[in-house]
Image 1 (cartoon, rainbow, N blue to C red):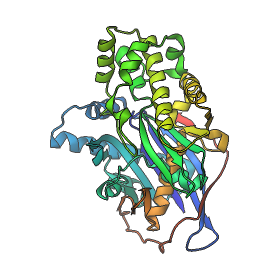
Image 2: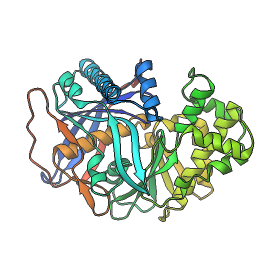
Image 3: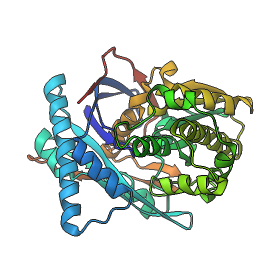
Image 4: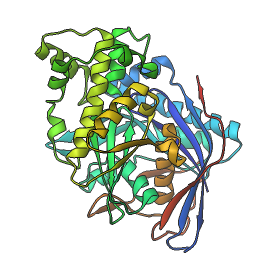
Length: 400
């Protein structure tokens, strides 16, 4: 089957679109699943819409009418991206999986209570003629789970049983997936990856820049130990795993408070250098406190394109004898690993396979918006015995 994957991360820096072919082999009840990425693009949000998304995610109040207008506009943005993908790649999807745009992840007393992803899927179904799977996290939260991170589902299926490997995804928030000998994964958010770096760059440049391109700012700055120490006192970092968080927890307010505690106001290069080390240190600390002995961390996400962050991470992990690799060494495009995750999750839900983020909780993820002409579900499967990837050379472009 052909699955079209749509997602926009917590930084809302673009819509990732991937067209993925899913094929099965072996035992019909518990087949081996192979995913082939046929087409990928990242399309920029309209600047005004992106500004509205970030303002809402950062706490701006909206009345019911403004909220409705925003989720409609986001859904239309995803629909346009999907229609463009179909027109360009020439492949008609059997299923669209839309993660939507996260604007809030509600955690209270260490337990996830709810999560909000915007982007009305009916617009996507209308534009593509395909059913759309959305609202992927709610079932796990209702069953008592965290609803995040989802990457552990992909890694447990892809890597299989392991005793010394973890994966790391560096989006707005960083999450670790520590693989277990029984084939499951302990997955949890460690804290910020790029969210504070991006927000600080945008604030200090008046929105002219949105991120630290090539890690250039961090490379020219000097880490301020006092500010770093204050940042590392954030209570989320001391919570036990599994746990989840979002940009509503790691806001610029904690940066200002850390500077006030240290009695300084940092210039932008020094601030970005400090925040880059903050990400690296909090990831290394989380891994060290997770229990199992890990010797290799495989990183993906936009953060691996930042040489300064990769250098800081490599150094922080090496102090514990841990080697950092990137997912492209395993044939997985770091920018589109999450797209493959959502395609995998879509295949599972389409075939009524429950997925488990935590021991004792397994639910079928998401809700389906019908295609304009309806849809017919295939026969259910008992599970997936193995997940593999097949590489097809294709260019990746960022399309404004």
